[in-house]
Image (cartoon, rainbow, N blue to C red; front, side, top):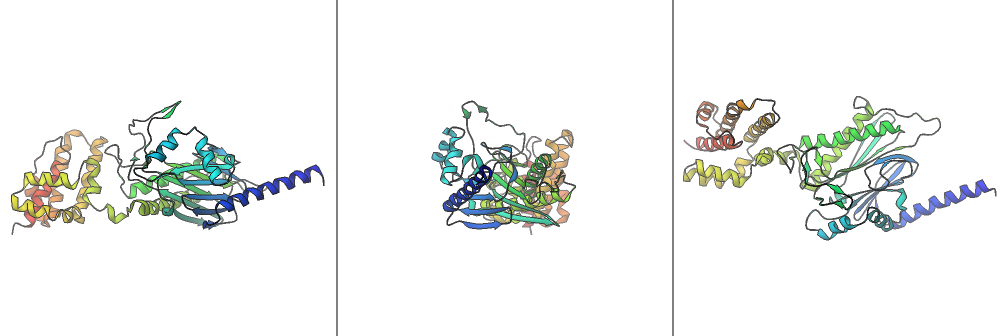
Length: 402
């Protein structure tokens, strides 16, 4: 046997050994999906995609992150529970940069240099998988998502910063982790562009659900701890290579669509947030300070005792009244346009009063009530929700005045 044959045999045996080690660690795993290029497995707190042929991989993994041709294992790991799991938070924060990565690789019997790792507090059992296809293109998206803790809009002011000693504080209560597999070779530039489409797909899911930022009065575009891994097969000698993943091309469409739908499903299972769950006044106006308690406090000031008592015992019906919710979303849009200076600040009182009067009509059910409501709504200009609370008080009383 020649030296070349010996080396080739050694490489084959090494690969088989690594695969058998991983299979041993995942002896009881559920096969979520498999293709000729990868196998996706889930067991306990781990979701692992094992690449069965060489791939070009782009990831946010702290170790082996960026662009790589050596990564073989794509891992999404539930590292803690969303709440009151400080010991796990401390373990991660106090670990040296590569030590936690190495610990997880050892736990899974994987070579750490071949693993891209993401951590989350979302439950792996809530992982969503969506596949989109067009002719010879197939895109698979695997997503875990939680948005209840640290959803935010990109660019919002933050209190955290990175030092040589690490981050001072990290909030892990919400994370969107995305793994995307593309079945055709992409150039490094196209894979980078694909990561942009991936991000836009995630943000479009949050937009559909009107997920609020936890740090300001904006709609969220993601969370502060989102991560991704995206992979495509390495090109063979005669392979066609995709050099663009533009949103104008089918590849971009498939990536954006698969990620958006998988993110929506993952949020549904992790946070129990479906489209119909967003049809409340609290969801529409919560980022501006609306809560049931705040609503009741304002109604108490604006109503007679009997009307208030009736409203208090039926507050869920008020908060979930779909016609009023529609008016609330219109009101929220006006508040957005004012804070983004689409509309002049000098118009605040008039436009908010116009919109609030519609809410009064919605709650009373009397379309003739609009003029009366508009004339009697009064609130300080600086009180963004004051007009709306006034309108609800008048609408509720008008509903039961006869």
